Amino acid sequence: MSYSLDRLLAEVNKRIEAAGLIISGRTERFVNVRTFRLYRTRGLVSSPDKTERRHNIYGEQHLFQLLAIKVLQSKWVPLEEIKARITNTDIEGLKRIVDGAIPTNPSLAKPAGPACCWVEVRLNEFAYALVEIEYMKSLSKSTARALADRLATGLIDLAEQTRVRNTGRS
Image (cartoon, rainbow, N blue to C red; front, side, top):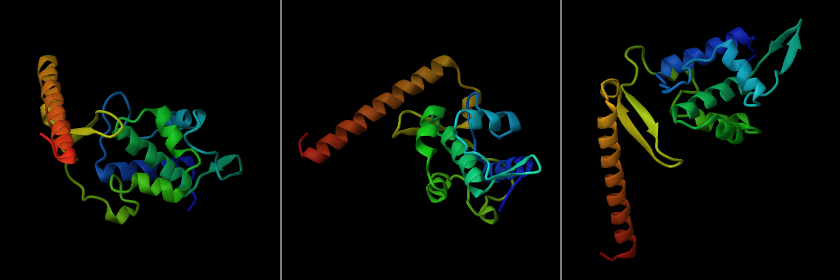
């Protein structure tokens, strides 16, 4: 399938909306022309497939590049790391990144209605915490610090239990 820029962005945003993908922080949830140009300038999106009458034509590769960027941003992956992960990745690799977060077949999208009520907070490359959005809205700095301390304590306990189980020692 081929897309004009407007159609490409409309399709990307439709899939983001249908999946209820939530992106926190200063990052925009949807892709607009300005954001698209930023991604092109930074090398996250490849050159158009062709140009017809001074209009760029984009394909499925571009669609899945943009969806992969948004999925990874929703997991708090920085743009530099996203670029490293998706540059020279074929369409099947991009679909694997997107799979699960955004259905690759739009007919399998989540039904319309309230978006997901949880936000994923990236702790590091391997760990995420899920926090209820309504709770986040009322979270003070002191409560956030207390929550972070509890999380750290829980992770330390879990790591210690895992070490004990793996070594057979207490």
